[in-house]
Length: 289
Image (cartoon, rainbow, N blue to C red):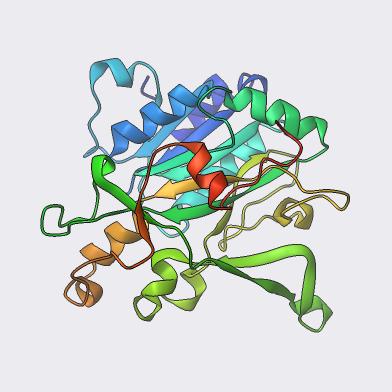
């Protein structure tokens, strides 16, 4: 379903968004746009919205199942602006945002829907869920020079770590229940990644609320949204498995010719299953079994 603008999209869907979880997909290029949308529909999102330029083409069947919003992804703050517009228009809605060639996984997602997950998370009095962005990459860059291959995807099984998140308002002491997470390609090839873009944590699932805003560093204006767990026990977490960093490192002239492979001794095939991610400690089922 095509909309003439984000305003037209929100006029038509804002009232329905709080009833079922919604997903916002931002297409930076043509890579794996369809597979990203299909993955979200399979997870059970009631509203899937694609923000993209006219160069992105979908099949008629897929076009009929998603909302298409014309959006200039090259403008400053393109994603932040769009997410905050949706937050403002649909308080109470559970939302997920991601880029093309990114795939949300949560514990037991093969048999449970996104609605099941968020119903439980809401019962635990949580309004946001931490997601780790786990890099995917093709094992053979000669065969897949853009580093994207869902059928032959690899991931790092180790090399992830966390540091306390300093609070400038409190003499840079660590913030309560907040950490900065690192690892994957952004860590292994950090010389090609600006320091401000090396974190792999994102609040990929959250509940819109009046006055809430997403900030440029992918944290929220409400500090409780940025925590990894509530004070009394561990909560659910999820992952966003993403080709985005690999794709960027291969398309950027400054890094493309310095990297002939992303594989190392801790590379393993990605199994496209939540159990692998839980076994590696990359997401937490909390009290949900």
